[in-house]
Length: 427
Ligand SMILES: Cc1ncc(COP(=O)(O)O)c(C=O)c1O
Image (cartoon, rainbow, N blue to C red; front, side, top):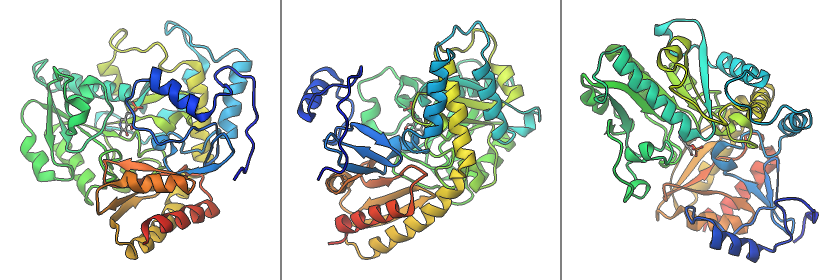
């Protein structure tokens, strides 16, 4: 059924290719590093994706939280197009200053609570990159440098505690300490210096701490690992252990930060403050890539001097303009509160479906970060059925259907989703 006719446009990057031709082009020339559902998206708007015939799909994946503000948010589009039309979008060599970079790092550093207050209370600083994994690398460098410079650990001996089921991206260092075989098999030699303990298990963390431990890197909730929420008190316990043993505590909030779980930052659920955080995805509102490592300003100055970090596009004007607009939308539209409110309604409705379904093992989540674990361990089977019914969702770790729509999702859109989940999950 055609609900909206997509205009045939003469535009670079936009052809009259039919879906089969798009699939063929991608099959022949694109690396096959993603398992894709058979949908060719031609247009995006708000919480919706459209195919060539104008059929609508409710986006319950939101690009893994990159589209928290909704697709093509008018405020973010306006900021980016204004910048381009007025000559301040292009990448500029990092040997000069730009206004958008100054504005963005000020906005970001000030909206994050004082990180690592034990190091001083002169505010935070941000170091910008492009994809999230790049900022995870910055965080790892920070932790290792801290271990060497402040704790006197021999350079090369620093150890970082990480967790089972973790996901911090797919560069060599991050896959080196992944516990998922397919991320790393055959890609050795792997990066040393990481000790893996059970996610949620403070006793395990205690046992892993030794004289070479410099930091702890943790997702405050695990997205790719299966949509897991750690036991109450886990983040607080990590904070206490970090204080006791002088460890640099970093939370990777790339997927769960910026409103997704019903708080601006996930660590606010437990009222603890880490020493550094990593942000990405929604930080630029889904239009251009941008990521950030944010920490106490004393610590940033300790670890990074001219030449010890860098990125050609990291913090370039267009990304910073998008970033300023994206953060404004999150704050002005109260997206964290909205995620808490809509998420509570949606989770309750999903729990009701689960109580009548023979397929659901567990429903878990906070805010608009909800996982539905299925008994047969094949979440994609249900996602394919959902796609036929006009909903895009995917699996997390094979066994769990991930429901993480844009945070602007409206009540009638929630009803639309619930109706389809009911069809797919209740016999
Ligand atoms: C927690 C977490 N860390 C890091 C990353 C990597 O981010 P990117 O794919 O932008 O490099 C992701 C991506 O899903 C993530 O969820």
